Length: 375
Ligand SMILES: *Cc1c(COP(=O)(O)O)cnc(C)c1O
Image (tube, rainbow, N blue to C red; front, side, top):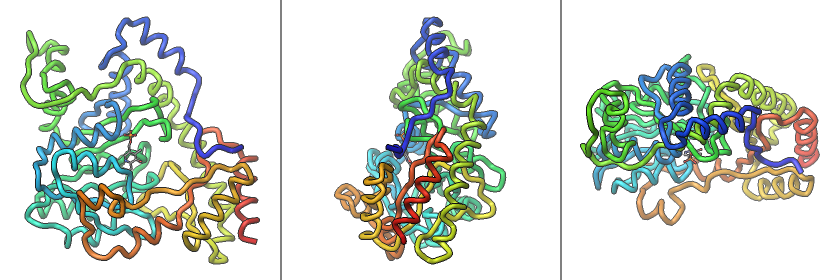
């Protein structure tokens, strides 16, 4: 069986975890957390990067930092993971879903402005498959309407837009290090903070509303409760696992990109014949091969393809029941404008196996079976 996903493993994880234990500091913000934060800052150019317990929690931190209040409106695509919406729903916000572009499956930047009302507080672009949204347009809209931008870059580590790292173009960027993502710590994430003014409050909210981070740096004599907050810092053991992967990030990225390219080349005849649609990466985007998907003709064809691949020992999956059609989405959100592509395009999408270490034999076999299905 070729699984859909295999968590990445580079070899040094166990040694680093052992070291974290020997440091006698397995709680948060130890040696390995600091190293991961620094790696993220160096790699992305973010003003500050803070490791968190998940991307979901990074999004929650962003909602807290923006002081989102009941009744505030947040604009995002409906074609996304539940966490993108949950973080804001927890603050009482109303979610305003906007349609996606069929080529990248990202929010259609030309439809955002018509969804803005006087209650709108933030735009949350989701960089699907590690392919960037049209960020110049989105940040320009935000600037003109005085809105915040929170990038859900859960899938976007090591990907770029016009040479800038995903997650560094909005007020905040949220990364995921869940085991299904390109780099993993089991469960975990990071918050990228792009305005220096937000750094201190982010540290406070992450540390249960206390100024403990300043205390640990010796900037104050004792720490105290200064704001609302929660506990968003991961164990240093998890950070140790992640550091082993970040140190090998180029190797992992190259390996995934090579698999992605093999799929693309191997299936491009099917696209030419009009049988499937392959992913589109705009010129200004450098993606990270977070996933390889194909789009079939319709829902029924997709269901049959997934079943066919399963019979042939290949784990393929679909993605995202659009949030606006889910029970909670109906309760907490509203779709603005016409659902021209969100439902129809998500119905066609199939993700093929993609992970660090996927072999050429395996991609060749998968390509052969997809072609056989269409014969
Ligand atoms: C994976 C994912 C998340 C959630 O990440 P966790 O680290 O599991 O909380 C959020 N948004 C998107 C788009 C994702 O792909």
